[in-house]
Image (tube, rainbow, N blue to C red):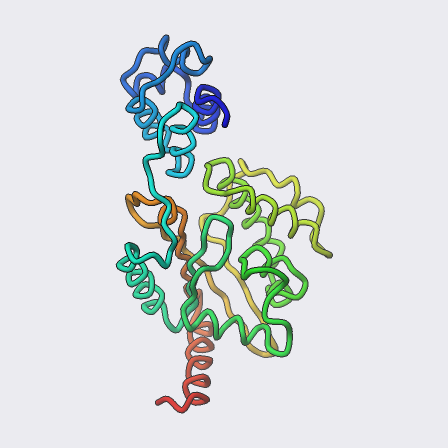
Length: 273
């Protein structure tokens, strides 16, 4: 376990704050903060939590800061299927259901797909018809988008989408939302056949469009979506803070009609009205 001082200095650098700015926001002296960062002073539990709050450190990393300072963790990490998270699961299911007939996913910090709505299962099954359902390994957004046997072959603006995903993954790593497994998966997918080498050195500080459309095509059907990512507000559990709900919205009437048509075909196949 690394010392708490260097970890706090790392987070201060990641948030681009000077010692003066952080000390002012946290109501501590610059001298004491400097001593903490260099290991000449030991922070109290309350001070570690206050600095972490000002630095907007993710809950998982706040627990690491506390452990590094010799204290017990503050925030629990529950399994998503734990009884105490039943209300959250119900809320997630409600959000996913409301997105019908358009796709929606629940993703964790490793980009693994934890839940989907019926529209997402229907849409990606349609794209993969007659081919393996997923690239090797657990269902994962990065693998599905980059693997030659994933949905990549159906994304007509794949390079634009790939660059946006790499920037997002790298930025999340800087911000503390990603884990070691996410980094390994990103390195893995960048080595897939046909992935341009320049994606390995994408500048994460470069400005990006707030909305990147994703254009899918299979046969004579075309779908154009943009996505919005939602997180749970003020979570006090590590697992919940790291969940993201990604909802896809149609960018034109053609996509709306195609999505409704797909839903209708599946209801008819299941004998539903």
